[in-house]
Amino acid sequence: MLMHDTCWIDRARAAIDSKPKLETRGRRKVAMEDNTRIVRLQILKRRASVVQRIKAEISKPPGEQNTNKIIYLGSLLYGFKAEIEPYGGAPKSW
Image 1 (cartoon, rainbow, N blue to C red):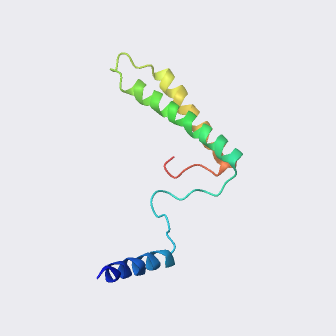
Image 2 (spheres, rainbow, N blue to C red):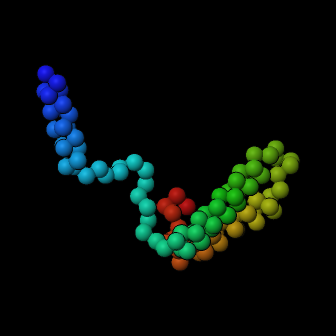
Image 3 (cartoon, one colour):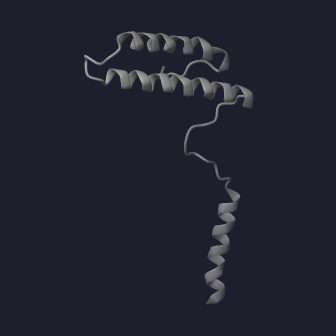
């Protein structure tokens, strides 16, 4: 009886080992050099910071909003598109 209990476990282990496990969770990594990836992430972080500052300025009451600051930050956003082009291009969400 004890031998029969272990035989199906051995067959299950053999079946699992015969199929390679592929990771399917998350996004696939973009093939790019480490230096390029670092510079690209720095640009993405700076853009995220600007977007956050724009949202913070827009969320203020109408009398306290600084429209010149919003316009200036908006112009920075367009500069990031040109800046990120050599490093894999702008993401689709931009």
